[in-house]
View (cartoon, rainbow, N blue to C red):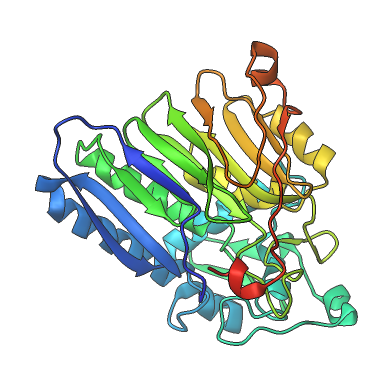
Length: 348
């Protein structure tokens, strides 16, 4: 992918422990792994795990299993790809179809997101795009898809990779560190996370984790787009149109990264009331949303994270936190928008 960026910035809270951070470009983004200095070998092995996952889930490497599946519609069984697809089918059901990996028929085949040149498809082409989660078939010998199905695992793949690395580090009895794949982060121990404004490079809140193994996923409509900024990469599979209700979705949980990665993708394209109702059912998933009017909605934070609202140079206002506000999904903070009409400014 041409756009490499971090949406959230984790800080380890380790006293007098020397830490090492190494970064590589994998899965179309910057991947950073932070462990104790003496665990450099484990960092190397963690990167190898991610490279293996990329060789299964990538849409960009023609030798990757998913790339081959999208071309031939049948490949020999790949356990990593099979697991990711099985999870994706479950997420489709849990999100009432708002997370659909067959969105590749639009995101990859029409817009060509992640390639050197993107396009603006016609309304007729968008309407004719073939999406069908039931067109994916997995068995012990092979994985196949029906004709015209194109799969895009970008909405859960980085979270899936974070989970696999976290599982490996747990096997190594490692309990201090951070795995970060762009906006998908796993804090193995207590950490702080700075949330960046979707309209500038300013930080508007700091998140303090209250539990180890905090999973974080952020999805935004303001970083990647095709020929116009309205043509961003988060597309509602039900309408073939871009999601418009939210410009930023950040989720926090002690469950898997892949799950909230998929949920963040789905929420980004849901109608607002549908999204809030969905989040209301997820008591173990905290959220901070920035809607299309620049208001911050947050909830489900009690016992999971603590939010510190920061002084914000773009004239954001803060509300005093009460018990009611802490658990009310409709609590809001106003956020003023600077000019965001220039694509080069958005792509910084």
